[in-house]
View 1: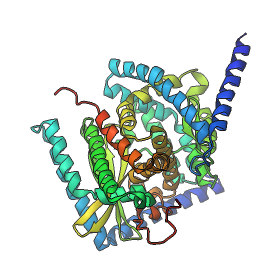
View 2: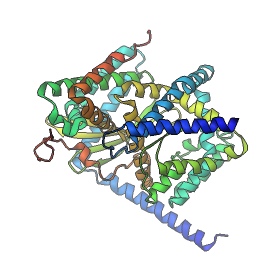
View 3: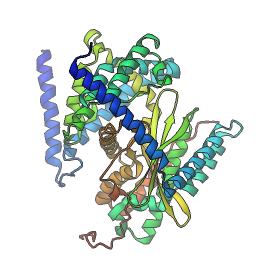
View 4: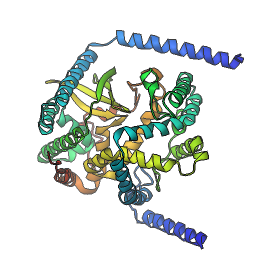
Length: 212
Length: 257
């Protein structure tokens, strides 16, 4: 026998479920143009990358090279660098700006190459997406591994050369925001050159690949 | 004898903190007002990790295999059911609370004491929830970032939440030190990620602080949208600034020096 409060709770629950389902349907029906563009761009990228990673005929180093060149094409590293540096960007000379973009790009690439070592047989699914205030689109994906799922969102912006990724947000942690926090402290203590030097030093310390 | 040693240890730690606090002259960072206290604790924790926890975890990695470590993690996750249940009820997430009960019943029986997770395959996905998130949902602010000795990154709100989570885990009532294997196993599973973070971060302390702060904020925000599970609606507000290119035209950004 349900008590009254419990009955009310159950009723509220059922209502909640109904609302949620209705909301999801409405959202799927009302995909705006930029949203579907960005989604298909991300989908196509995921398909290409997974195709490479799952191909057992390609050696690991070659896989890393191919994925890297895809990332170079599909992320806007210069814009990401500007977002990371935020107002510090103005303190950098033109040469420092170029050096930073270059070092940052190499740094991200080295880090990303590392993570490919641990790729097993994850699957990636696109979930919902969101049109942002400034016409960016956030495309949300779920990476499913053997035990866990990880939420990975891509912030996409359309520029002259089409859609480009400008941030990766893993479980709510934005890469741009994270580097911005680190860069802020380093620039204010050690200046632009200190930051560039640190980035470059990190690449030298990258682990040597394990023997093939 | 023992007590005196403990007292000495405590006063020593207090001294270290005080010394660090006095040494700092820079104005406190709003994102981390306790930094002068947090940094030394972080170095200490990092040392404990490098010289105690990591070697043990790698030993565990050596004598076990992926599937076993996954199952151990699932077992502990299953035993933490009461805390997730309470947190969901406390946030009026009735549907998710019921899902938790169903998951617990299925995984404890069919899933053999929680070592397996058939519930996920049957359409009842896991969703992390804890008392700290519930407090956040109630509008309690996290307070300053706090690097807690041995426990790691936290804040006053989440530390109280963690105390509740621990108290709500029946395993800790009946089996003393049952958490040790969980800690070793979790550290072992995260080994590659932790080392990648150590390598890729420019300032490991700031990396952890920022990641923790962002992660908790999104975990609290995320619980508001149950229907968006797996698609994560995060940072409903306050993030737009992050994606604005600063062209220095507004005048307010002119460097002071």
